[in-house]
Image (cartoon, rainbow, N blue to C red; front, side, top):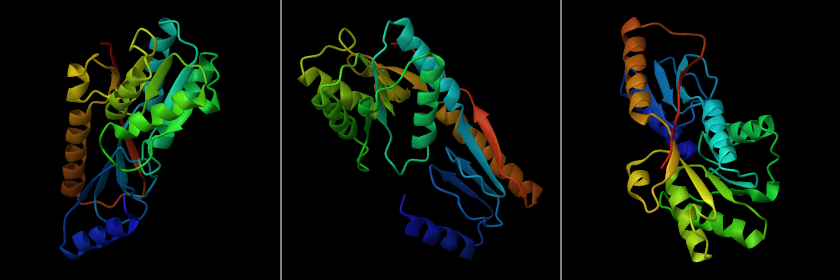
Length: 226
């Protein structure tokens, strides 16, 4: 997510005459006149095809599940600033809450900090929620890894999951199934998104046409209850 490195590598690819670029969670702010497909990209850049998740549906699935369990005081672990999914995911969650008549307490939104891919980011963010003294009975986490870190923080505080606090992750990584307790999550079909990215990129290369419009290809999430 270093802008200078992204610019340098893009220039490097162009100098090596690559036929197309497949980007993953990487900003595509400049038209390159090459076929470009961006997975989890949200930039409206000419010629770029974005493979994106339906975040609105994902948020609705998560909220409905928590509301059906009786939760009303819901905390959010917001993604890191550099992630392309952070803002759209948080905006979708807040919009879904409003549709269900729930107001999210701003003090119950804790943002992940740093680029450490371990559960520590979620652990620290959940500790901040606990230290705030605000009441909550559920956590919606930006991803599964941070959710696992949050569960550790809750247990250290003497709280049981899910008896005292319910936790929902996002992605459905392999660890989610085998963690104790097993993690309820919103499945993002990552393999499907990767396959679609490759298919669209190869199609653009074979068509050999420059598009003046951007395009979104949307995939659907799934609630996995554990």
